[in-house]
Image (cartoon, rainbow, N blue to C red; front, side, top):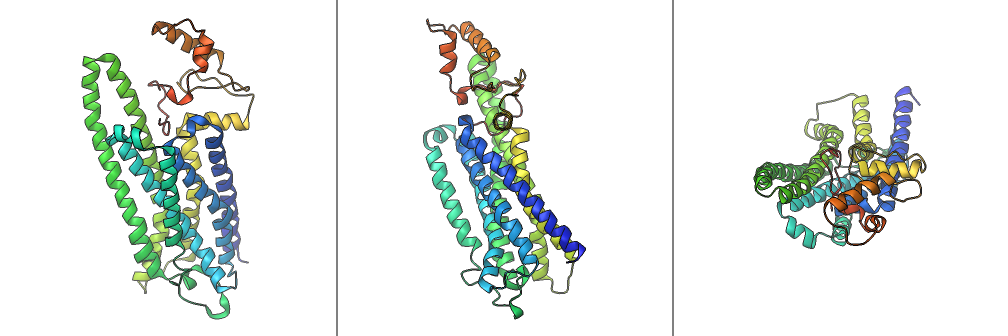
Amino acid sequence: MDVTSKIYISLEVIIGVAAVAGNGLVLVAIKRTPSLQTVTNCFIASLAFADLLVGIMVAPLTALSFQGMPRDFMGCVFINSLVVMFTQISIFNLVAVAAERFIAINNPFFYQRNMTVRVALYIVLITWVAAILIGLTPVFGWNLGPTPGNVCAFVLVIDMAYMVYFNFFGFVLTPLFIMFVLYSYIFYIVRKHMAKIAALEIVQESEGRQKQRQFRKEVKAAKSLAVVIGVFVICWLPIHILNSITLLCKECSYPMELLLAAILLSHANSTVNPFLYAIGNSKYQMALRKMLCQKCMPISNNSSDEYYTGNNHPSRSHMTKSSTAGKHRGTGNGHSPERKISAIPENAQTPTPSSQNEIFYIK
């Protein structure tokens, strides 16, 4: 085994371990944190699960295929089709999130009435079934046939016409164009509505501020998910461009190291998304701290997110602040402050302007 092969396989192992660890934490955080169990996060969880499977299956199997194994033809076609399948799952989930954000901002009343977690799960199921059918098309017959000596390699068994015309043009570029259009229109709506909200705030200060805060949450989610899509494009376009060169320019050539770097970059996308969630979302940060360090939860004074102590009870500072706010609003009705605070659900809190890193906190 030469030095290039050793480096490539070592990096695939590192990517696989990082993808499993990062996406596993995201999935556990969503499962254990009620405030993260939102419609948007149904798609985020689906995306994280697909990335988790990339770490468990695709990265190791790609390294195996790089060594010319397995010798079984259909086994070779199957393991090389998995990476295409999981790419499609990621893209379809990103399209679903873009459509969900578009509806939430463009038609919030329809969204509140109809877009439930159950509906989101049905959409996730449809995206997985469609992605499996598209990704496993080579297994169903669209392949190059057995290779001499049964040597396993992606370019020897997967038809580049399928990869470029069917997969890249049909189910990568087209969904990305749809997402670009949706997010462009979302930000157009944002600019239009922010002017209206500013006018409403002048006329009716209390109602205007409430609408402005709610709309800002939707905007933050849209912006942050647009970043996720941008990173996805950066990671996946190079390998698809090289596939297109292979098919459309027979005389063209490129170094093997460039191809391996593009493959590694595409797999590395599965390790990036968890960091994007955690860095930009204080809810994820809180959930991860609870899982990793039960007794060292810091209390933040700069965010409106609800923090908990090690025994899962609201901290005193949160109770005092909320109790005082309740008195100022004239909500005292004979109940004790502790009773009132315990009845407030996590997803009913209103973010303050200082909580600018809330990206997936959607009701």
